[in-house]
Image (tube, rainbow, N blue to C red):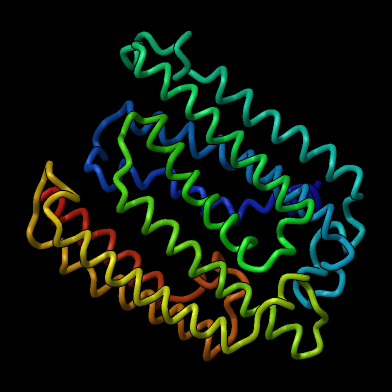
Length: 308
């Protein structure tokens, strides 16, 4: 059971917190119905992402065995068989769709929670479509799309956008182009930093852990990371300064939160380029006090200004 639990990668569920971003940026933290919808989206994506991890680990068992860190995963260690992983992946992926289809927010059960109308039904169906799209993208990723340079990073980044999209659809919060663009760019930055770590491992004799690494070199990845940091920072400043981004509160002080965004981005860039330890964004964020402080200060300052 320990091996199966590890295969689900519960620590990676932190990535699914992106489903709460529509609620966070729209200023609806005190709306109970929005919380219910966001939590449901979070649980659904946790189950789906665990299914994806099981499938990906089963497909990558041989290459993971050559990786200095991934060789400690349950399948390379022999704690869980590939057959078990495939069965568990199928079960979890189907379960996630079933939960969303028959959730308390479906048109059949949600009369007492949210008004059911044509718009609501369309959002409900679109939410199911988003989840199915995420699953299909990741099945394609596991089957071979991850071996295509550039495309591999974009698929992962799109997965984060789909998380945000599901959170917005389920809670009835329209997504602004800003949040979609910023999430995509931030996820792309993290994925390229991870690819750089893979390339460093390969060059240090750890084996070519990804076929897509043959399409990258350090010079290219360093430039891409620098470009993405600049675009993200400029984009965030434009978001903060644009009155169209937050018409309901229209605070002129949101730009002050950019100092914490810049601090977090530069710190992660330092982890990737100087420490060369960006192989796991989740681990880097949870174990780095500087990053945690920057993220916490950004969140508290944004909420303070939003509700001021």
